Image 1 (tube, helix red, strand yellow):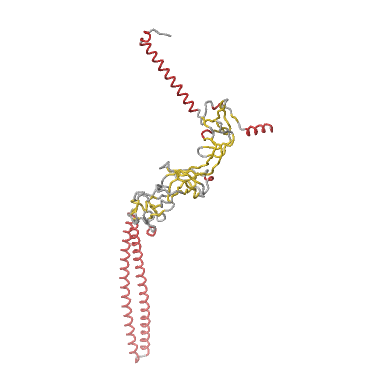
Image 2 (spheres, helix red, strand yellow):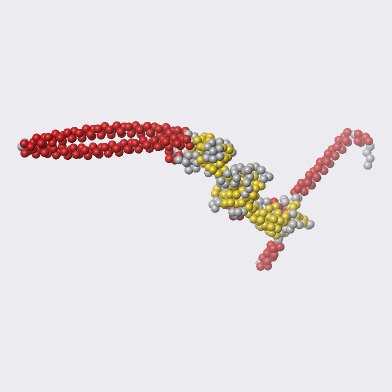
Amino acid sequence: MKFPLFFFRNKAVQRSLLGVFAVGIMLSGWFLFRSQAKEQNDLLITPKRGTFRLAITATGELKAKKFVAIQGPTDGMSVGIYQMKISSLVPEGTVIKEGETVAQLDKSVLDEKIKAAELALQKANAQYTQTRLDTTLSLATAREELNNQRFALEEKRLAKEQAVYEAPSIKRQTEIDYEKAERAQKQGLINYQTKVQQAIAKMQSSYTDVEKEQQKLDALYGLQKRFVITSPAAGMVIYTKEWNGKKVTSGSTISPWNPTVATLPDLSVMESLAYINEIDVQKIRVGQPVQIHLDADPTKKLSGTVATIANVGEQRPNSNAKVFEIVVSVLQRDTTLRPGMTTANEIIASTLDNVLFIPLDALHSESGKQFVYKKTRTGIVKQEVRTSAMNDNEVVVEEGLTTDDAIYLSLPPGSGNIPMQYLQTASANKSTDKQKN
């Protein structure tokens, strides 16, 4: 069909033609996008046959199997100190030598106790001096009294000797006076000996108080020196953790029954500490192989084995689920491994050979039946399947599929009206039930 030349020179016609072309391009793009989206929605896969690994993945944290503990004072309870605050701590990862300072504890509480102990020692010394002066004066008075009794006895003896020629009554009176003076002198001697023993006991008690306060002060002085914590060996400083999982660092507190502030790990033998939920722990056994992946280096893979499994579950902080602690031994030696690194531990619970398996995304369930959307020559059907083992990504199909089938990874169009195709075993059971009825 031919158009006159003026037809194309007309601006209105030109604008109309451009509009038509633009609409055509938009429609072509929309149809192309729709066809691509449909292809994406209709993503088909085929079941795989091969080795299926039943693996359980648990996040863990590396730690050294052997380490040297760097500890603060353990005798704080003897002087009434039960909590000690860390005022400074070297950065984690610092390589130190034996004898170098690792941490310092806050001495404010200790200094107060030292001042109180020094004051108590001064009081004890003053009391000891007072007791010594009192006993000295008391014994001097007792000795003077004893001397007076001895002189009185001597006087009574002379009077008795002079009364030999006196009247019998006077003679008898001087004898009685002598006997009284003799008994008083003997009793005075006994009393003096008792006072001496009392003085010795008081001095010993007072001196014991002084020694007790001195020992307490010496213990505080010794504890003060240990408030500067040094390394017992050479190595890399790694922070330890409190009961709540938080790392011990500057500002944390330690106690005499848990005095560790840091550790010096043996980096040649490492292990990963992880926690398994109570559902999966039944599938794990000691000695099972483990593939260890490092978050810090995803390209690196290490091998390990399950070393220990806790017998009792626990509840971790900020979690309501019960978990069981497991320890995975790292079999390789790697100088780049460091305590605290996060690991993904893939525990191989079991291995199934020559089985058919599909992605979990392709498996659906309805009214207690498991099925997949399968593409056939006549259309799409809900194919019932029977499954068994399952891991985080795939599931084993025992019946209902072959490697030649094509199944959908997502819901196909009109999935709500697609009929169910039951397994032959299920159909046979239904027929048997109908015959019984």
